[in-house]
Image (cartoon, rainbow, N blue to C red; front, side, top):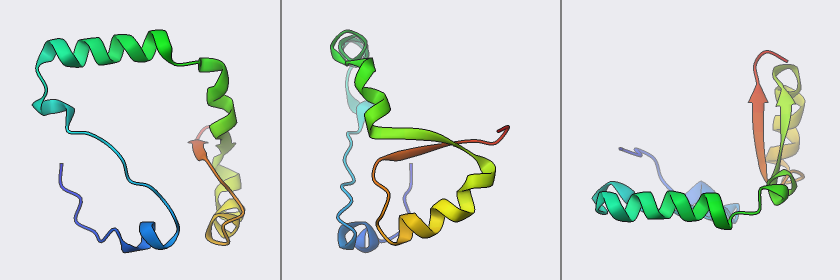
Length: 80
């Protein structure tokens, strides 16, 4: 995938862009990695790194995000 942007805004805000190019790994390695995630990941901790918000909350939260008052991930439920 192409990411036609600069990473400077992320760096300035202390955001880490981390990942791997899993497409280049052999299929067996990818299957093992997904299996390990299912076994090793503590799903009980996922709630601590983000929250679900309704579409109507996005505009007010955007200001808080820009001010650095929100940490973690936001999942937007467009039906809520």
